[in-house]
Length: 128
Image (cartoon, rainbow, N blue to C red):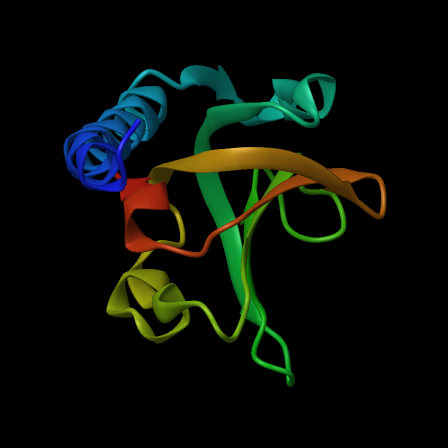
């Protein structure tokens, strides 16, 4: 294939591939499985939405914020973890979320025997 033809083909294919990839990622986020917080431990490593009532919100000295769902720490059934570098860490939504029903979307991980999702974007948390 001649270089000019190859460049032309790539200029058409590459943008279409990028758009397709973005639409696919958006579609995955919108169709995440929704589970209650007490089932999250059985779904470690999965991309899903965990829902429950925030019992307490705690921000550590290092700036990590924890949304303890189901009960206060250390008896929570699930944690939404907001690292200090996350744009969400400065969001006013965190101050008014205690006692509210929330949905947290992302990949579930285990930390010290408890399931959690790292919240890096506002789109990952929904307050009802």
